[in-house]
Image: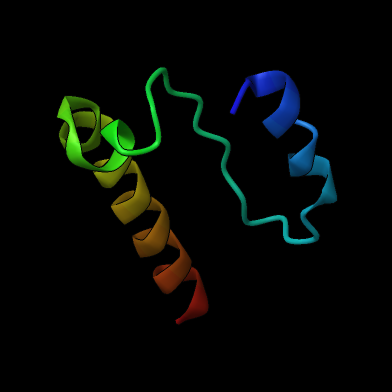
Amino acid sequence: MPPASSTPLMDLVGSSQKTELLLKGGHIGLVVGRTAAKTTIPTIIEFLIKQSEAAE
């Protein structure tokens, strides 16, 4: 999805706990390719850990 299409969605999400991660690549490559191992998955894990700590 082009950033011009996805970025406006950030303003529509009601939660203040949100992160926008802009990456080049296709949908599948973001979760199974090199980008997934180096960027996508670690970023998701970091976000979830922060949310878990905030909930404690």
